Length: 174
Image (cartoon, rainbow, N blue to C red; front, side):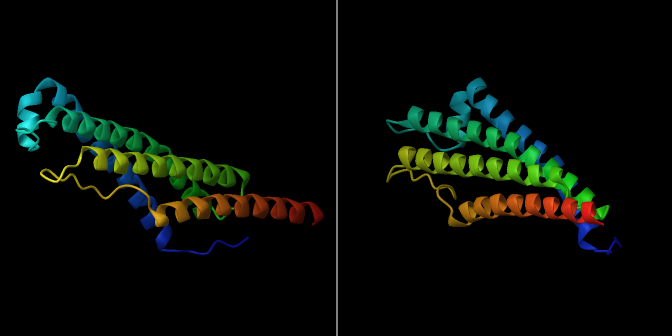
């Protein structure tokens, strides 16, 4: 099978590698901030503007929980990114319809589903700790696009599995 050159593949490979580094850097920053909220709570509460009202401690705890969920999301992003790198490698090698890619996509779909659940949890926490005097707004919660991405990834995993089987059948008949 002849390989077809695509400028998108090297760009995707480099971009994914950069995203892996940025993912860990962002995760370290969020984890550091989370730890610091316990080390110097009064300063953190003042810096985040959550002092001076009755439920300030509840808001601070809610923000800690959101940060902890952010760290979990960072950890979940890593296997997604590394599986995508491995898939790009198979495409670069001219052999994308392999069983490993179907399994990779299946795993990515499950991880994306978990990320959507985390987003909903973050949205709920944000609503719980938000007050009229001190609104707490985040771009989190239910995302139709996120859930469509989950569905699409599950479907693509199945497409890759079928493509692999068809290729194996074809090679067996030649």
